[in-house]
Image: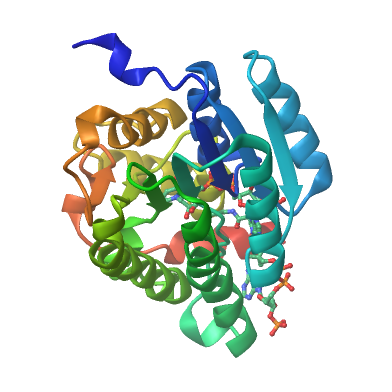
Amino acid sequence: MDASVFQFEGKSVFVAGGSSGINLGIADAFARHGANVAILSRSQDRIATALEQLRRHGGAAEGYSADVREAAAVADALKQAHARFGPIDVLVSGAAGNFLAPALGMSANGFKTVVDIDLLGSFNVLRAAHEFLRKPGASVISLSASQAFVPTPYQAHVCAAKAGVDMLTKVLAMEWGGDGIRVNSIVPGPIEGTEGIRRLAPDDETRERMTARVPLGRYGSVDDIAGMAMVLSSPLGAYITGVVLPVDGGISLSGPRDFGAAWAATRRES
Ligand code: COA
Ligand code: NAP
């Protein structure tokens, strides 16, 4: 393969939710390959730590503290990033929240909180970014989850929210194709060392059962996901849009998971 397809020197990358975990791993991969990177999330402290990491690669990196549920704040951050780095070549929308709870164990506000962060937040990020995306050429990637298409007990809020995220991906791929903007979802499997998997598999028993369901027999790495984000945003991805792409060692083939035991473990801990 021609390695030059992964050169992102001088490209502008904006990652919503980019201060930790998978999203930071994606931001880091682009920074390692020469991009200028902007990240957005709530905690100033976490942004500062992430920026230190990103700037070590030699490119420029900026951080914006905002809640993706606040459309005006998101738009303002995107405007500032555009002023700093120019048209956005790669937009990643990955801010998310999760907790384990049966539907009867979550209030309307608990359900709404996750839907607002994951789904409304993605809409806010993508909607506000359109004005600032490179046209033609931008690659937009939302982070989804297998809960979008695998009904998963104790995850009613995430299932509803991520199904919406993937439908947004498909609709905007159609609406924005004419602008030369590609819109795709990546569906990570269980990713080692991340907050998301800590919340879903907090105990050894759940972790072992989860691993046993992955056809490739292991948790994924942050780099597994970052690599696919780069492929989708490189010339190799030039004809790919509207796709919901599992990068999950095959776990989404193995059907519904029930997090009842993990939920019980969470309750014992608290
Ligand atoms: N079980 C049931 N309900 C829960 C819950 C749990 N474990 N954790 C939170 N909730 C409910 C709260 O009780 C509250 O509802 P209420 O007002 O009716 O009591 C509602 O969710 C909002 O909680 P709050 O703590 O105010 O929300 P927040 O906006 O500060 O934080 C979360 C959002 C809850 C998702 C928080 O965990 C978070 O910020 N997560 C980000 C990191 C993350 O989840 N990473 C994994 C990504 S996959
Ligand atoms: P993470 O480390 O918890 O990252 C979430 C990021 O979003 C943080 O930077 C967080 O920072 C930010 N964020 C949360 N709520 C926000 C809000 N309201 N406004 C702005 N920013 C907010 O998560 P992760 O486990 O790496 O997961 C990343 C993505 O991959 C998520 O979309 C998740 O659904 C998806 N995914 C993860 C896994 C997994 O195994 N981890 C599996 C499938 C899918 P602040 O809290 O400071 O705002």
